[in-house]
Length: 281
Ligand SMILES: Nc1nc2c(c(=O)[nH]1)N[C@@H](CN(C=O)c1ccc(C(=O)N[C@@H](CCC(=O)O)C(=O)O)cc1)CN2
Image (cartoon, rainbow, N blue to C red; front, side, top):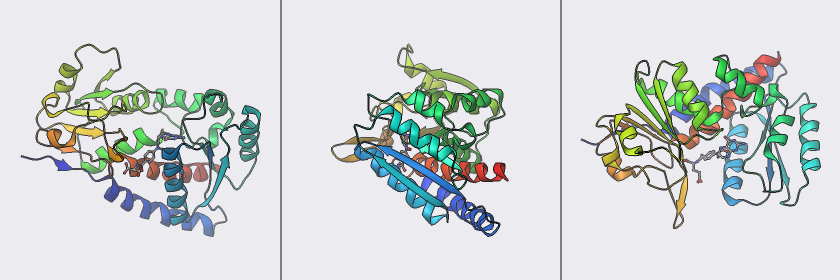
């Protein structure tokens, strides 16, 4: 039997309606949500994501300002812009699109963002708060995955969750959020031995490595929930880290690429911006 599809596009649309309603209320009260998005350089994928973020903000009734800086932007110029946005009361959330060009130090830039406006949840104090179980902002992709699991009615308590990929922006916070919901979590990385046996134990498998189609149907436990965070371009076509065709024959639930986690990432960015406004009142 074929897996049921978890549509990020559909879930995102319904959450965005609620967000738009709240944004309209906040605007009436004189607190229109404001998000600043900073793009440095010419990475085509980053440009698509940033454009999608700005358009989602506009559709939800937010103020959204996009700052485009050239590839050769200096660290001082970027830090200066972030400081200016920190001081702007009409801006509740600041996002610097990653990855940055190699000559820029993303840690310094992220630490410059005021923790109260860090709607990506990447600032060191927000990463620390996430560890304590009392986060200010949850990073958007893991937050989106948790929302998808919640809205699909997946039981997390006592479930075996395996996260593949230990990045700071997805894998590590994802493992923490699953742990906090009572899952038993294994966080795999590029050195993990016998990845297949870890995957085959997973009731919930979250894959965030950036390698096209690396997880195949034979690696999946029958009935498992498979969440594919990967977005890869192969011959001009988008695909995930999971080989969808073989995986869907074994899994119970599966997210597609595109139309899965991606739209939820943007939705949770809007949600975090609303949360930033509410906290500022
Ligand atoms: N500052 C940040 N930088 C990056 C983040 C982040 O959360 N904050 N995450 C990723 C990229 N990302 C968000 O920026 C992102 C990736 C993909 C999508 C998305 O909607 N994907 C669509 C397909 C879009 C396409 O045509 O390519 C989908 O999956 O359906 C949204 C956000 C790295 N950088």
